[in-house]
Image (cartoon, rainbow over all chains, first blue to last red; front, top):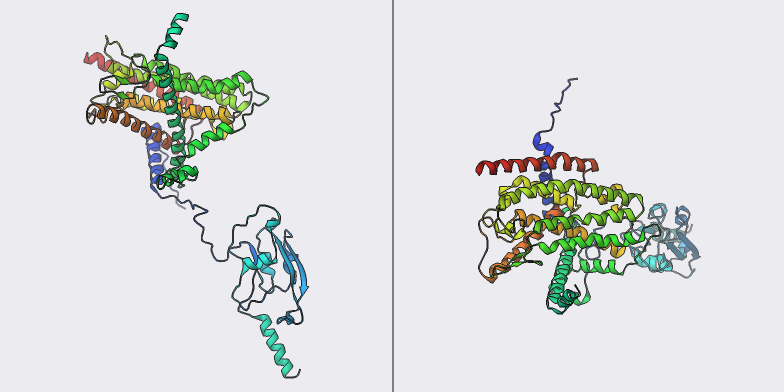
Length: 181
Length: 366
């Protein structure tokens, strides 16, 4: 391997006075001063949230307006800081979606505990819980920082669905009932 | 003596002197406050930020355009900062030496304010000089003597705080001031050698110094002296890259670590006052004082020329304060031994050689 010896020359007189270096530095800071500021003026200007951002966890409905959560409580079990508490309930037999059998009676996410890890979204078999784009969650007391079911659905809204799992199940069950199985 | 005092109190001079003093203090304090704003804004621009642009008062915000402009420029911020210092709790730590602890900020600020009295700002159409103490012919000596007293504030603050870091800061501050005072004096001597004539009455007056620069500024006759003096006023004002007494990285807060609220505010104002005094001295001695440009002493005539002169002096002062700030956010702090080395082994020999060179030059020229 060829070795290249770099000459270590001593500092020149101009370099030893340090003044040219200071002038060069002043030019650098002057150029910086001429550039526009990169500050985002927060309350007036908002950041653009990228896709896949893990914001406040929310509950979503499918496009038919049905609540997707079936209160299987997997998220409650997987939640590392134990922020989620679900009170499971049954769906009335007269309801249109009675075949789903279960829905959460109450669903609470304590945002003082939540660490925004997204494990609840990952574990959910129904794709009912989503960490969406809301990044600021404030309150003036502890109660305000606990999102109840109504709040969670309000935050979550409706997300597009490609499966319609329960609708398909219902159609299949009806088809089988007709064919007499 | 009593008769003298009575005469003085009964005469109108008393009112004039108090009014002048108050005006000077108000002007200096507000320039210092806005120098802080300049510092915050310029540092923000250099770092790609915006700087203070939120503080406002509802009454001012209500004025269209002007209110928004004042808010965006952060012009209300100094008032908020000052009021904050005024209304904060003023704690007296249990371990300090109380008398000197309370006295130190006052001793730091008083010389900074006092040195201003000799400063000439401009000239009236009648030929009278606009200054707080007209007729004094020892201007530069007085300013050097008084502004150096500011280090007593730092030394006493460090000593009375009875704690390690302030003490180290105070020791560094005193050593630095003494080291740079010599080079500063010698560089100034070169300039006076040029402007003063042997049988002149007011040889050390700053006014005659400005008058001597009607044509060419001293900066062009004495570039080396100007450079030495410039470096020395940075050191004297304890500014970056020479802010040894309060080098935050190694001394917590430096000499004012144990100070809070308005006492800290006084140190803060004192630092900026020293900046203002240093800049003014540089302007008076090297940048032609209130003269417009080299070769162009004034613009207009009569009252307009006077007003323009004062405004131009003020403009130069602001530009120089900006330079102070600009250097601060560019150059990193020297190490303490480097500061001492620059002072004793570079600046002092350079100043002495410069002086000798001018001695020889004037001896040869006759």
